[in-house]
Amino acid sequence: MPGYEHTYKLRLSMTREELIAECRRRLEAGEDVETIIRYLRASDCSKIDSIAILKEACGIGLAKAKEIVHFSTTWADRKALDEKFHEDIVDALTSEKTRQQE
Figure 1 (tube, rainbow, N blue to C red):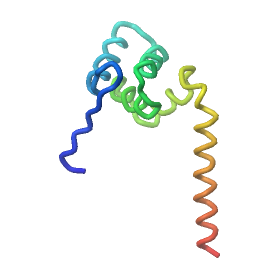
Figure 2: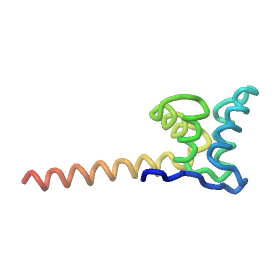
Figure 3: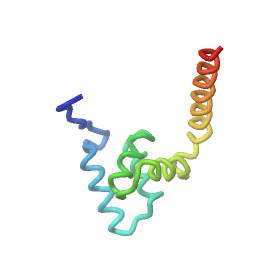
């Protein structure tokens, strides 16, 4: 949506931009990426928010950020559920495509 400013407040009253800056500061101070991800989750960031913020804070691509967060210890409790959700979507799309070809 043109002109839409994507800003939101988290429990710690930080905007996305403030979280990115804080993560950069922590990385520069020597904190490892797992600690940063743990900080984001403790700040009430969703997994998707964590991916987006890590991407910007580390200056990495979206796929790499997604991989790091998905395989992190911090989000290990969600990994199996997220993978099942992904498989279900692929199965549903494959079934729909097969039905349309019949």
